[in-house]
Image 1 (cartoon, one colour):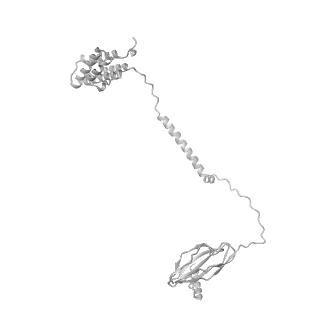
Image 2: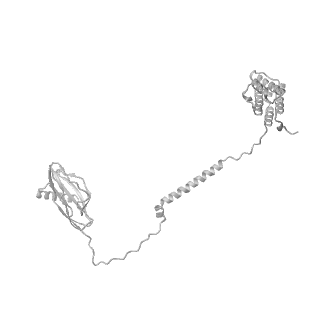
Image 3: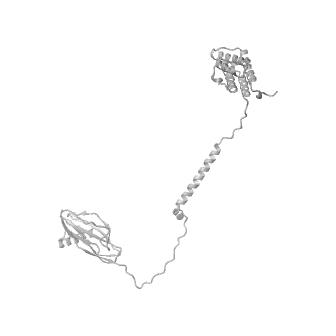
Length: 303
């Protein structure tokens, strides 16, 4: 390749020396087959002067096309070199038009060249061959999956989504708590009496827990009054509660019984009084009696 380039450059320089023109053009092949390529080399010797190159488009004329264009190179002799790849799809002799350059404010044209494009030679003795049958390749599952991978991907995504939904539903069913047994609607007085009985069995005051015993007992009474008579007993002091209960269904004896129990509990809780065993036992008996005497008549137990 280097030897051919050197020979081409020498030929170009020789042509330039003979013609005396600062612009030289050279075809590496003046004859090409139909659709073949010929390399056109343009050499400009501007001797250091500014050179304006012509605008070269995709075609040189109606028969010659430019399929490749290199940049402008500079040789050691300060010559400008550019190469164009030409082709043609029309058989015949076609002229490569001259290129017009402006060198030092002077227009210079290159020489015109002739490109011979050979057509396809046909054998007149050849007989047209029959058309070959359509070749059907064997069925390949791998090729089918590659050609329709979108459908396989969509189907796989749908199967995965359905499996995920079923898995989530299954786990949700497992986490559902078992239905709780229906709670029986126990009357208020029965609940309070049962709580008082449980408190009595704990034997708190027998263990010295007088304050805890009195507090829990009066809390049960206050809760009973609040739910039974719709009075905020848990938020009232003893005096405030007894004042509000003056207009309640409680009679005087029941109010006095409740007042005595609450005041005794206040003495134990706030004044650190120590009740006697008889007072503690009487406290429980009075609480049971108060609940039984004030419970609704329709909730009264059958004899």
